Length: 196
Image 1 (cartoon, rainbow, N blue to C red):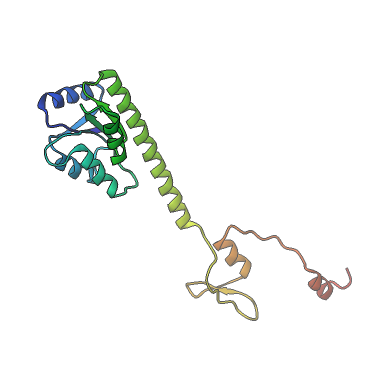
Image 2 (tube, rainbow, N blue to C red):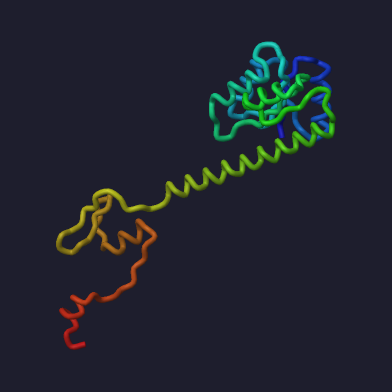
């Protein structure tokens, strides 16, 4: 999985990159919020991002705000990383749209665990998006009867879009989930089978 690290402090970036590579992640790195936002808005964006709160250009919180302004079916999972650790800062970061929050200095194992949670959320989101697409595609293929159907007033055949005429039951079976079984109504029974 690719992870974006947006961190302007070279030592912090190096530490994060080394750790994430050792955890098995592929790293995309930037040192400012503007580049982070640009990357996270691409179709091929990394689906997990660790953003430093304070960076040149846009802050990590600003990046979160901008990402959430543009609703996306499959948004990236964003972890804010900062030395700000007051309750109001945490609330501000989460309300801006961050999915998680880690304070510096961070514990390596906690970081790995939180990234693991992010990866599970991203995988679940991707699975749900895929299912929604499958359902939308299936819905597009569902045959429905709607609108005005030209029907012959004598034989009751129905004309389709290709100007072909079909028996009513064949047409309905082709355009819906209905199936027919044959029977005889009371009127027809009396008219055609008087002796029975």
